[in-house]
Amino acid sequence: MVDWIIEVISSYKYSEAAFFTSVRIMDSFFQRCKVAHKSSDLRLVGVASIFIACKYEEIYPLKVKLMHEKIAHRKLSR
Image 1 (tube, rainbow, N blue to C red):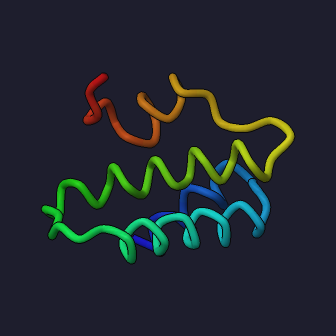
Image 2 (cartoon, rainbow, N blue to C red):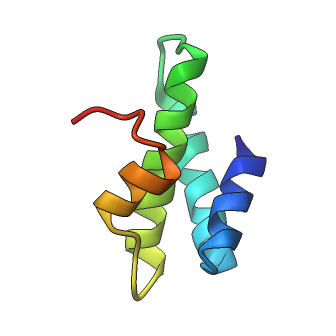
Image 3 (cartoon, rainbow, N blue to C red):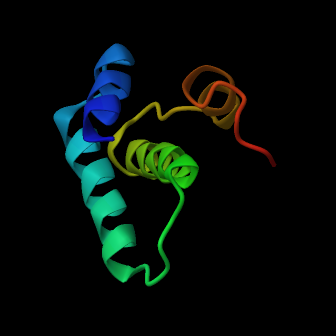
């Protein structure tokens, strides 16, 4: 998952701070979570952590539509 986050962050030319923040958010989520997740949920957690990190770290963060269409490949539902 971390390799995929690196790929997404670098392809959209966001900062290293956004990468480290997204990994920290993802790690924090998994530390606090008491339920085992399916592997399909891992991508959702990754997308959400990238979205939150970019909102926090970047001047021009990713848009929800871009996250849904390009990064999540329309596999996430509303």
